[in-house]
Length: 342
Ligand SMILES: NC(=O)c1ccc[n+]([C@@H]2O[C@H](COP(=O)([O-])OP(=O)(O)OC[C@H]3O[C@@H](n4cnc5c(N)ncnc54)[C@H](OP(=O)(O)O)[C@@H]3O)[C@@H](O)[C@H]2O)c1
Image (cartoon, protein in one colour):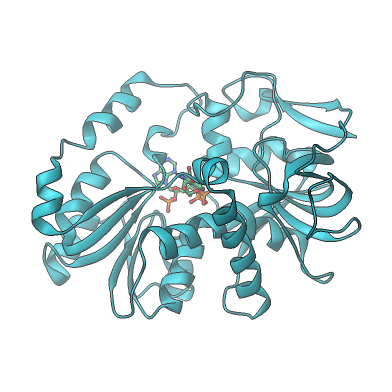
């Protein structure tokens, strides 16, 4: 049994080390999984760069999602059988050939489900589903803005919003990505490296025109987004990719710029406009409302099985090329999901 340990913050080439591991017996609420594929998430890049507070001290094994086969289970696990293939959300530990994880983040998949697709369903689709269904309660005909729409969560959000009959505005950072988000269902694609998204939407539809905004960039993107929010609108913030920047070095300047970029808000402004600013953090949902995490995971697997959502696997790496995969995601080259296979 092996795992890639994050041993050093900074450049991906020096960050990981393959080590032998011993897997402990699963606890009462855990299953042990033999991993076929593990997914990368942007939070992993933030952890590598040293920005992710929830990351355990180094050396540690990061990784939020795996697909594989259950090889052991704890006494309380009733609805998952040994031998079943599953998609699983791991609270770290995913970059491994074997991992134990709590049953609340584990859902069976069909025998013919591609393992790489299954990893996308865990963190990225479940986050998008929770945000779209539970936090934002998207309605037919609503105008929705999705930031970083070409990414893993962005791809999922677009499909879920279109499924609800929303009109989708989406941003991405290159013309190739624009083509991708258009094909994925975005009605109004915006290359935000060429055009300010706020000015574009203001010119097209005016301020106060978006019913729902999904923001994973943070800072001044949230501030500008709030100006575009209609009365009755909701803005969900679920990431702060802006902090990462292009450098491998941690930057206090970028952290402060992002923090001050948010601006200041008073509850009365939200009350007055009947608006909401909503935070989404799936770690907290997993810890405090595990039954909701389970429901989100089960629902996205059902939607996948019925053909209503289609994860896009942008790139698959051999696990030995983990450093390259990390760099690819960090440098904003990816669309959809980035996955490593053992
Ligand atoms: N709160 C939660 O529970 C939760 C769960 C999952 C994910 N997330 C967050 O959701 C976001 C998306 O996650 P993901 O795994 O699906 O990643 P992703 O969207 O596939 O990758 C991140 C994308 O963010 C965009 N981006 C914009 N500004 C950036 C900047 N300054 N530096 C780097 N990238 C920038 C890039 O797309 P462009 O080139 O198109 O700009 C990049 O490809 C991340 O912020 C992640 O932390 C949060």
